[in-house]
Image 1: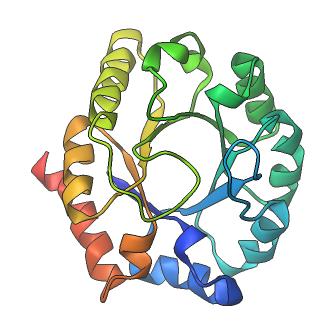
Image 2 (image 1 turned 90 degrees about the vertical axis):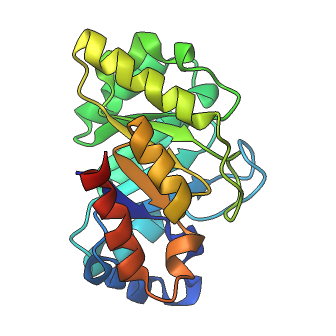
Length: 219
């Protein structure tokens, strides 16, 4: 089943609890948090306290994606705030294998992310410790960007590696996901689709999420 994880980067920050609460009614499968520190990426968004604040508003898994330097220092705070997934960037961590192990030991699902210019080979030796691999289909740091088609080759390569070695990670794609690009990503093998502005600005978000879920039947 393809999962849909709306990014609350596109939600109304003044009404975050309300918007997060709506996601279950729309049919979403997870709540995606884009955490930015102003160093790894230019923007600053929110941190563990936002995660803690919205946790009571939903029973959906909280899918935390940290675009930060020194990601290992954030593991405990997001665990304590109620996060279910914790995904960090391989480009920001010299000891990715160890960090993945620490995330799992903290009781969260461990994910690793790849920027558009980062090849899959950068994470191949750590895939055995991954519950999720996030392929960025835009450059991280801002919402509303256009999908980068090269992400599809990475998704296909990750599918190939999972089959070859028996890995069981989910493949997530984030950036420029709308009805059209969702179909391309699903066909390539993506299992979780992150979409922000397309969902929150849709006339009927529930219908769009249902359309994305229906891609399962077409692949």
